[in-house]
Length: 349
Ligand code: NAP
Ligand code: G4F
Image (cartoon, rainbow, N blue to C red):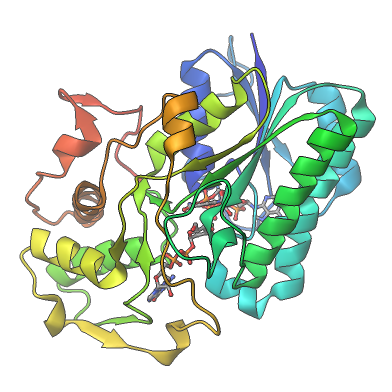
């Protein structure tokens, strides 16, 4: 049985990745932060009582700030694969917390790499790099596009990207970067723009909200569906040689377009509800992200299946379901294949 260690296991991607790894027969170890409130909502459906037989999911308290804790965990678990998904992942928040974001999103990965290097083990390591690293570089972006980071978050990810490359080339570790473009789902954090929009639609339908305050609607993003992206992460670590891979759909739309697609699917006119609030604008913006994922398509055999319009439907339907609002239900066709769940997601966030 192969063993995987996943940091960021309570996040959107962590939850889908654990489902995928368990379905492939892995023993999965997840790093979770101690919090005064429960932070495991996205993985509660995967929880296994340790007193039962054949337990395959183990959770360990820890933090990317804690170098000795990481070293101890890696030495005791002895994973075959490590997926570093933990991060302060919100771009807007990173302008307010630049030092913390650099520490966790950037230096946190170096702590992990050092722990691996000192352990004498040879796990394969995946780093969750980001299309935000391309920043102001014009689209389309691929593995050769220069990084022009526009935020503390993106700068921290560029630092971590280069540390991955250095430990790969200098220390001979198997370390790969997945440079993932935006990917969303019903489990997306509620302050990212897509989820903010789809939750607002459900709340408007339920009579709980009649305005939605947003920032810049002109930026363009290459939005894909998160469950498909964790498959790419896994495929990246199954390659004979480590490397860097761009993952995205190859199609982009503006925030305004995504709003229109989502509202019209729900039979609403966005002009009646959308308002502007200065606080949601950023000191610097990333104007346009569009993946050229040719390398991944050719080498990994990975392609995105769900486009932004279908993604909007999936997310609107899920948020309406959560509030018990009657909805068109068409999006469910894209969340489920031939009547079967796409993954083992039970429909709650
Ligand atoms: P997410 O939902 O924000 O999840 C982040 C995870 O990191 C959570 O489990 C969080 O724990 C954990 N975390 C935060 N600070 C930590 C710390 N100090 N120590 C240990 N764990 C910590 O992010 P996501 O969307 O799943 O993204 C996963 C990774 O991919 C992130 O590194 C992100 O930057 C990167 N990425 C995401 C996208 C995207 O579009 N989603 C695109 C490119 C790259 P809590 O639950 O306790 O907060
Ligand atoms: O949803 P967002 O916050 O995502 P952003 O900044 O693109 O970052 C996400 O994707 C990255 C991959 O490229 C990840 F690395 C990162 O961890 C994160 O998952 O914002 C998308 C766009 C931005 O241009 C933003 O200015 O939407 C614009 N926007 C407009 N109004 C807003 C809002 N974003 C948020 N979060 N909230 C608003 O009210």
